Image (cartoon, rainbow, N blue to C red; front, side, top):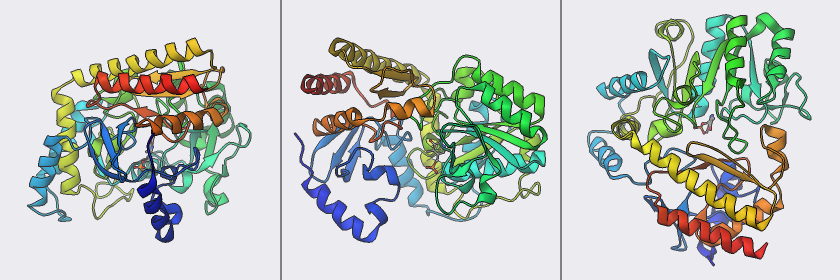
Length: 429
Ligand SMILES: *Cc1c(COP(=O)(O)O)cnc(C)c1O
């Protein structure tokens, strides 16, 4: 069993000078309770905490570390670039090189703009969609996360399809009224919104495979239906591929699921562990963007050379070895089947959702297909499971609303260790 003495002391010190002791809320373990571990270093599939304990990491920094932590070519590229300076605020050839790779790898895009986070990418993509269409409203889905900018912090009241009410103080009614809410995997809820606001809707923004209410794959025909509705009403379809981009396939969910989006946003993997986001579209849409067009968007550290080499080296590794995606899928399926068998023999209610290297486990017997059904699986069982695995050296997402992200450094020994820890815990349930 692990101890958390040093982590607890570090957390107490952090809370004195950082709100809640963390720089992003889910890190505080509020959902599962207890003290977050403080990391000292990471290598390959492992994290090492301040109490010198090892964890098998199933989060991979929420997705970016798809090659594993401290992957040698990425570290070497960062070190080599750092010696040449870390920021110029002036164009570099690196930016063109990574942009060309992205445009080649991802379907339906001609140009890409780099920013510093997934939040910035989604916020800017919506501004571009509004500028391009001359319309103001957007449709988002309850339970989908597109970063923390005002327009996205809107959630449905009791699952109703209605005008969004802000779910954070500080978001104005004026902003909320332009965000319309629909239910994930419920095409009728989207049709209804188009019926009410036909010519006012600039775009639908969606996680093509949801990862922020656990992993929820799109139902058969759902994304095709959204594509058709957008075409019919002159709205743009924005795929938020901040999680799925370069993870489900080199070309992301568009490639994996065979659906074309109008604007695509990226983050996480595209920065290889440094802060990078991006948004991309066909040339006719991207030409609206400053300095070519009137839709303003800018960033002092956008295209930062350290971030660009980390991203470029990571994307090149993925491009050079397409088998990575096969390996990731096989490992995730292995984990899935192992967990399934153990849970079934125990007779506990459960749902495991998986697509590619994204997976989530909910302790419920109802299929998890949208926000409400995911919420039903967020229960005390989940919290005990999380802590039991942590104590045994397995680091899982500290909330039922987060997906696992497997990485290429995980070995079958690591998966076996994880399943043994899981079996041990199940004996105590
Ligand atoms: C993480 C995430 C974001 C936000 O990205 P940040 O880099 O945290 O700002 C946006 N959309 C999705 C789907 C995400 O998973």
